[in-house]
Amino acid sequence: MISTFANSLIADNLSSEQGNGLIVNAAAQSLNHQVCVSYSQLAFIDKTIPDYELLAQGVTEDIEVVLIDPDGNGVQQITAVLAGRVGITCVHIVSHGMPGQIQLGNVYLNLENSNKYAVDIQQWSVAFTEITELVIYGCEVAQGQLGKSLIWQLSELTGATVTASETKTGNVALGGDWNLDVTTGKKSVALAFRSEVLAEYSGILGANDPYLVADINQSSFGSNPGNFITSGGILYFTANDDINGIRLWQANPTTGVVSLVNSSISNINYLTDINGIVYFQAYDSTNGYELWKVSGGTATRIDLGSGSSSPNNLTNVNGILYFTASGYNGTSYLGTELWKIDPTTGTPSVIDIVPGSSSSSPNNLLNANGVLYFLAETYTNNNATYLGRELWKIDPTTGSPVFL
Image (cartoon, rainbow, N blue to C red; front, side, top):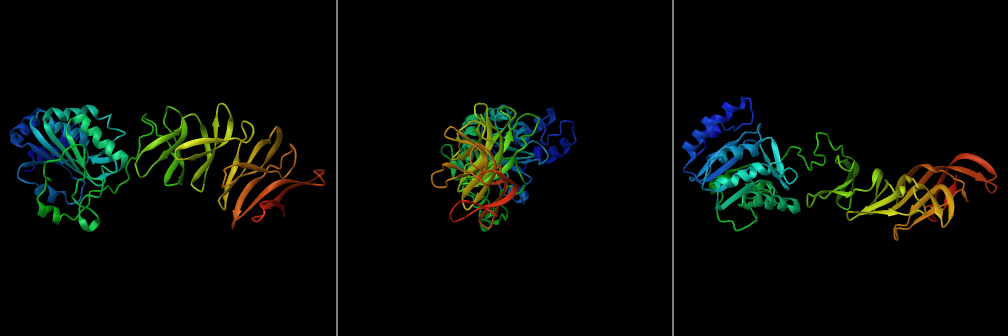
């Protein structure tokens, strides 16, 4: 049965001041109770999924259907429908899914915002029994660590056994199925739809629209993510969480987890991938601006012999990181010179174009067909004759600087 509450009251309430789709007022609450009192299972079907009418008409006889208004908050719509009910043994939620998220009307419920909706979700349990199951139909909702964490949190908030899928849900020809293979307990209820309806359904319950991956800045301001780079299958970027300021973050596409790499370093610049390691310039209050690297989620400072070496011009040439920096060779100041990182040992070494404490101040580093070219302050006759800024290269065979 498709609930009158879903069919007529959606339209009636969309123009109301609340504007929440399935809005519960006194009349709606009464009507809802009269029509649905005999049903112990409900199927909430989001109207944004393809061919939702087929699924709505294809439920088994003992299930009431409630259509979620795509223009309203679906979490609140479910809360409103369940208000005043008792003895609900199963709630089926059918909508677009993605790892760790489920679309409900005009919001995405995920681990990031589940605390925001905790009060609403906990209210569902008032309508539930000790054996109630919450079954979520949506692509890959339970995939990865983030997905499994979400269904466990929903289970804790509602007291229900929660079941979802870590693969695509829907038409077989599109790579989907109807196997909901991840559960927080023992799943006992059957699918909400008749087998012939599932065989006929031609859609897939995956989200095609862009969706929020992580609400990094939970204030009214955005996190302004930027400086995106992928390395070793991880996305690294900078963002402002309104607590630590602009910091380095990482997103793991396998687990769906988005996390802060290091809260103590700031002013992140020049992110450069070298053989699965990301090198960058960063500032910390003890050492100033230094060269850092991140691999496996851990950021490490690379010591060039003194604080605030101010590395710049990070350039990848054949898997070798070249950069400019001010540094020391033991106790002697080397000025601002060209440096490189040994790709085998990870050890930094200076390419000292102007010996002593004077600087060649290299810049404009360019990888041209596997050869590093750059400009540098140039001297001859043991630094007695200044030639100005000239073009240099690194010999790819010897690794030595060559004045052109």
